[in-house]
Structure formats: C-alpha cells, structure tokens
Image (cartoon, rainbow, N blue to C red; front, side):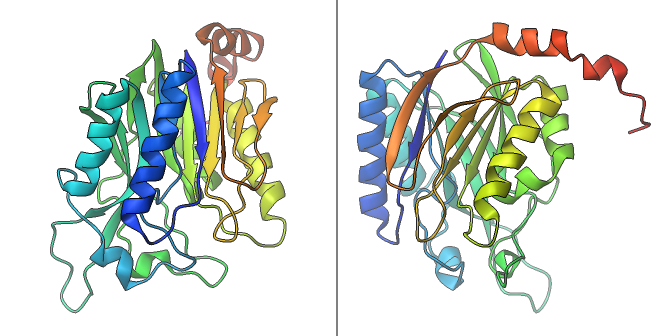
Length: 267
C-alpha cells in the first residue's frame, strides 16, 4: 500500500489552500500513491485560533468539502485532510458558537469514507483552542480501510493521549494518521518525534505524522514503522514524500512484541 505525506503551509486564503491540496494530490497520484495525508486545518490556518475559524466552518457537504471530494475523484486517490466543520448544534446558554476541528477521509471515488472530530483540544502554551473549537461530543475511535489496510484518525494534541492510539489499534488500525499543526515551543520538536515513535512501538502500528510548516507549526512530518524506526522524515519546508506500507510489517512487530496478550491491567 502506497501513501503520501503532504506537508503544506496552509493560510487564510481558502481558495489557495484548496489549489495547493489539488496540486499535491495530482503529484501523489502520479507517483502511484493510493492515499495522500494532509495536516490539521488544511483548508484554513493561522497562528492563533480565533473567531474567524468559526466563521469559516461549513457542513461536510459544503463547498470546501465538495472541492476535496472532487479532487479525490479527479485523481482517483484517497485523501485525508483537516477542515472546519460547522457544528449545527446550539451552544449552552450564554456560550458563543464554536466549530469542530474535523478530519475527513475521502475515497478515490470522491465518497466520504469517514470523519473524525478532534477529541482533545489544545489549551496549552497560552492557547485556548476550546474557545472557538468544540470537542467531539461523543468521543469514538474512527477508522477506515484503504489499499487493504486499516487506518485510524488522530489530530495533533491527541498524540499525547496513548489511550486513543490503543483504542484505535484495538479497533483494527494498522496505521495511525496523526494530522497536526504542532505549535512550536521548548522541546516541542523532540516531543513530536518521541510521542509519535512511542505510539508506534506501543501498538505495533505505522504512524504517519503530518504537520503544517513554520511559522505556524514545526513541520518535520514523518513516517514511523511498527518498531518505532523513522522510515522517512521531512524538514521545515513544504514538501511531500511517497512511501510503501506493508501489513506484514505490522504483523511481524506484533509477533515479536505481543503486548496485547501480555496486558494485565483492568482497562
């Protein structure tokens, strides 16, 4: 199964972002990729989450999502990308309206395979994502199948919560897609790599960790194998990398370290 990591530099020009996504999809398809993975907030991003993120939110059948579906169908390639989903739900009395930070997985025919609303919001380092973004109301693991493998969806700060990765692996995920806009800061680059490797090793899965570029994020997207080895890493510039995945590598790692059979804790 062939996958492309698409490290882009999304901004506030939605049309430009969608054109960029379309360009990367075409390039990935030309390399024989079956799935291209984009970062969190692929269709709209800036240095701080603010009211504009709510204003830009649309339903998953709105024009922004429709352009993504059309791009996937045009190139015959599956796509995972982050967008802003209108909640369509009233807030509690007195609270301002908020949007969902959503990943959408699209099949090569342009159909929506799955969508995942971010569970853990980034209220750290002076940021308050939860002021404008609503967490998933009923947190559930989200997986989808593509190219004979099963993929689990995670968004950025979710990476710090190992329980979600384990739940996804228990649900059949062989590859964790971690779509991110990883905020820079002290030790953040080291933490990004360490956490991604740990999730791979703990669960015997590939981890495809894809981030936006500086200055909003750190870049350094990477593909990690089920033993925690970085198979390929990008730098800080916009770039993409196409690589092959094998379910045999997942099974081999799990045979070598069968932690599921050894797990004795009551949760």
